[in-house]
Image (cartoon, rainbow, N blue to C red; front, side, top):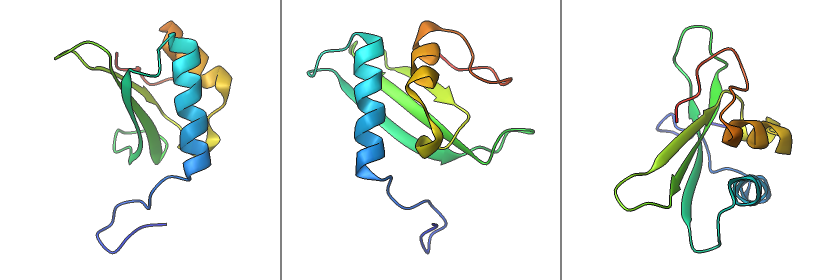
Length: 96
């Protein structure tokens, strides 16, 4: 659902918590490591309409960013595991 400004409504808290838990588990991250997980519209040609962007802030001044070209609610633990292993999960390049 879009807001009056055209952005997406906030992610489902349960889905967000689940994705963050997978990132911590498969990334070997402690609870002290900050991360951002958000869903954005993808405007690249041939890209699905939504992508999930994960930013891991474990090194000062050097955030790591990952993208999965799927809506957050469509992610599986395998998607996150493959993403963090460095292998693309779809035909688009994954930014790291």
